[in-house]
Length: 344
Image (cartoon, rainbow, N blue to C red):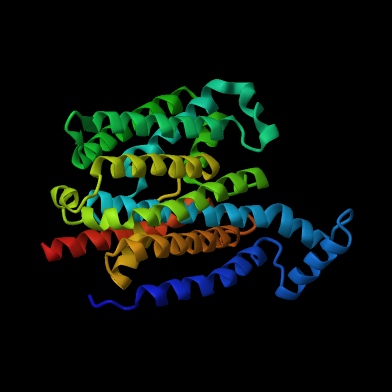
């Protein structure tokens, strides 16, 4: 397939689309707000912050943190997905392969089932024990996968892939056991969390995710040269002066931090880290100096639009955003497998 765009043109298009997508997301919801009403609401909030208009409260206290959280989570998931596809040299790789999502799911489930009345202990910070448990679970799963894949000879990405599959299987079994032990209310909380949604978004969650997203957006493109060299193979990368073991360690730590934080803040969001990087590679080629930033912005826009659609597609109820991304991603995944089979 020929290259459709240059790196600069794609980045320019994505950056131009960003304010439009953010405005659409802010206006979309059970209470529709027109562009003129949005401007009036913001002006009214600035004029009378003590008694702000209703639309201003909806925009600034409900939708703005939700949009920021969705944008940040999409950026992190897609950027990390692009990086892991380069690290594993596999277009089917995504952030869940190293066990972060499954470990976070176990951590959240343990808190939901075992913490009981303590679940609101950290609500003063805007996080909650479920988010704390999810982050700890994701971090522990990543450490376990990394230790299993590391020996005196270095870290094997193939062993890491197999270890991630094994840890995910164990995590699935633990989740099933916890689901069996849970009562109806606990089981509902576990199911909703595992679907992934932004209904619990608030400013503390959004700002934490935005801080991690900024770290990922700044750091990952700096590793583009190393990832390009790794596409040739680890031996060739070493001959080019790349510290392969150090690169692997930095990338896995950054992925664990980024994806673990996102899963803790919003639950499990599937396929964003798989779809967007692959589409970007089809458009501009495999150079990670363009793929990583373009995938990050594309993932942020995709997830922001998916969350906006989730608010209205089954109105007045709200559909978990993870369901929409799975409905979009699963057919794409099947098409990708069929394309690879034809190429083989």
